[in-house]
Image (cartoon, rainbow, N blue to C red; front, side, top):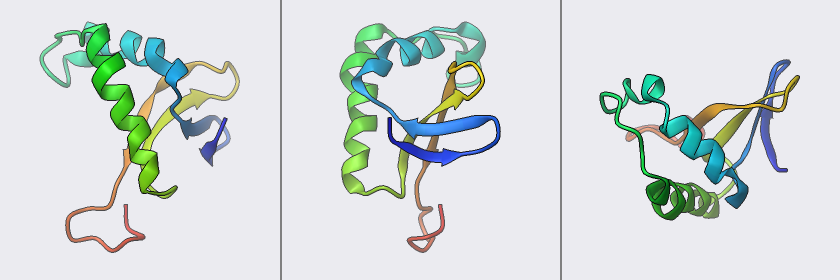
Length: 95
């Protein structure tokens, strides 16, 4: 497991191919998706063939930016994810 950031309660780690179920469960929850697209679940094949491969490819750009799985340290539970990237007019150290 490659940890990007650690706090008292959370770990942010790189995604792996084993995270398909985590992402599918999250994107399949209408209560989550209502904030994104009005509540429509994401099909598993979209998560498996599009989203997760894109997250994994992002790591080829280096170790500063990317998509990171948020894990609760006490339980090991997947809570969601973060995406760090530089803004349009930001410097290389300004996510």
